[in-house]
Length: 338
Image (cartoon, rainbow, N blue to C red):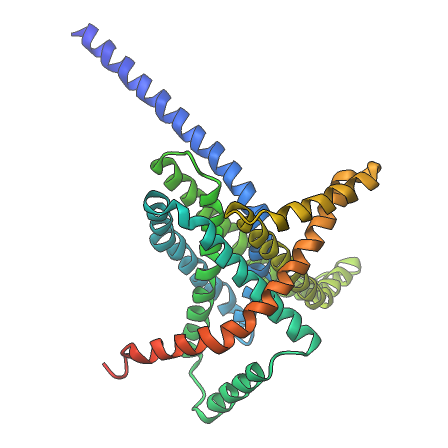
């Protein structure tokens, strides 16, 4: 009896050790995949952190954190309920599609970056300006929405945008998990998805409430504390503009890199080899900072390529994809019609 109990305890201890080893392996893989995903998806993460605060503009201060919480919860649902199972099915049944899908996501990043550059220099296409004016006129003709309806609309819009960005993050993460078991891929994707969501929306919450904190210091502090508070309040708009600019550049850089590297994976090796040759030559020309110079040159070339890809994709998106999507949307029965 006692021998059987000891054997059982030995088995339990062995299972516990195996489980601990598996969890440690999962944590290690998640850390590796997360670091690679962050480096490759830097543009997405920075842009998400820069863009999301706009969804709480115009609302009372006490509604800012609840709105961010709703968006974060929707982001988790996007990643864990839809994108994670989809990524696993893709890895199981169509691993060949991962690179083309990554390139599509890279093209989307290039398109977004190109639009931001166009807006910044005031050269948006005429059809975009006309569509924006028409949308503004239509909104002006409608009755003003209630605060709750406006909040719900903002949250839905933010979650819809997050779905696209989260899909790219999950696809980038999946591409780093080749060779792992399906279970391990699921664990790592889940850990990375949760970690990314907490990091991005935690940063967004800090950004959104920073001016309130600065105002509190300016009101209740004394001397240097008040000066710090006023500095925070005055500095936040500049910080948000700088963050948006960094996000724009990062989107072009990451998008261009994904497109070039994806083409290499699909057999079009010329562009990648050409860029790598220039990068190596630039790094070799500055022996004191070879790695840094090579990185800067590579990022700059990737960003220029990304801008060019965005300029090519933009007419296709506005003249072909957008009208096609509008027609498909018209075929879908609306709630009002139901």
